[in-house]
Amino acid sequence: MAAGDHLNRYAEGWTTGNLEAVLESLDSTYEMDDPNSGKISKAAFADYFNGFKAQVAEMRGGSAPTLIDLTEIVTQQEGDVLTALAWWAVSGTPIQGSGLIKVGPNGVLTERLTFYTKLPEA
Image (cartoon, rainbow, N blue to C red):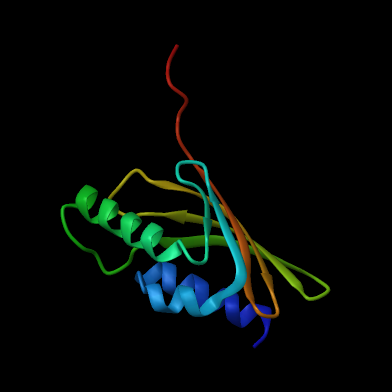
């Protein structure tokens, strides 16, 4: 499967809240870097994802048709690594940010998350 196919499956899983789709798209060496949760390996990803979904459902007061909405997706291919930058938002909540994603021929290698938020007032 090409890197772009892995990226599409990863995005589909996040958008629909489908854990299995995300897991199928991950390389065995996958690591997510979330500034709130730290580094998450592929083995720990299911707990992270399910916790995120629960937190979103609590904030929304229930479920919604999408987990996150993705926009502003930019990709660059260098050799067999595809790099993607995407803006994401959780509709019905103030949660939004960007993700820098690296994808190889065997799946998503890394994602580095950022959150868009105001700094605390001094």
